[in-house]
Length: 297
Length: 228
Image (cartoon, rainbow over all chains, first blue to last red):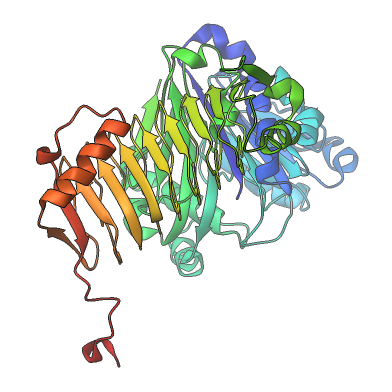
């Protein structure tokens, strides 16, 4: 199964509540997937770059990291620890160099996301416990995506949890399974894409990132995924300013959307949407098969 | 007419609510029930077997009214996947839209969807009557065996794929027909069936506006040319 939720806010007054609304939506979807959970939050543009990193031994890995990374990069680095994750803030043009330096400084560290606005938090466990340990409910932002996983294609690990991020400020979550992920992974690696796991969804994310790096818009990348990806998928995608949805032509993986003047919301089931403000007055619909939907600020 | 028995699903819980409805005897005089706070819950009013009227306030999740016998279920909202799955008799009316595989494998009774139904509506239907006031999605009536599917709007791709013997009536456009499904002659007996179904479903349409589709009977009979 897997459960997906997504929220794209149009009304800025709701931004302080983004994390709380997403958490409630995701917890409602807990019985669609008990293995792991994750949330991507797009926060304020602070005019700097940030990397969200994860460690199996945060106390050891995070100690002194900001100073060491700052010295290696020659810029100011700040570290904000959040349970097993930490958000490193640094110059936006130093993100690639920071990833390289981290591999030397802390080989055990995993990079969850990088960009100027995105932060991804994910761990093994139920949505409520994952949301609580990171304090997701207290986070503000413009849009966000959550996922609770029932694993099919790869192991139940932190790195196998969704969302996957394979490009700056980009992320993807998936309900379904891809059948051509091995051949596509080889092709994308030859094209220079970095793919960390054996997970099918990460290949889907890397495919979209590659398309966008080579000139496609988010909408165009999603359109071409319908031809190039084989398998079942309902995807929800986040970019710096945008939010997209696409389902494969068979469309057996469920999806419900709601739109009001204040927000666009996605849920694997209507249950995830029932507590959203003015849901009674929202336009509620099921996204069509093989049809790309996206919104941007 | 007895008083309406109201059940707050949030306060009562799904199992207790369904157990109460399922316990109603066929001669019950508590014939009118109302479920409030549906909130998209799964399996609402599934497995009923008594001539009771159940009004659901709000939208429902998976398998609302599944396996229904005799009960008259009316959802004042939309329905999630598999509404009325394997229904035997009675009726289910959905005021809004229905998600995929509405009425799947249904053996009898009447399922009315006042909005649109999405993909695989009436998949493997075995005698149920389904009337959709709006459109139906792709692969509707896939492997349909018996019963009637009436669509006042349009039908998506591959209507009636691998159909056996159900009757499919569509007023609007059919994007494409599935394997072994073809347009059939509309005879007087079909107009009578359709008139009756439209009336019972509260549908404002004339039987003459519809086309009928059914099986070409080339797939399910043995044909030596189909063998390897």
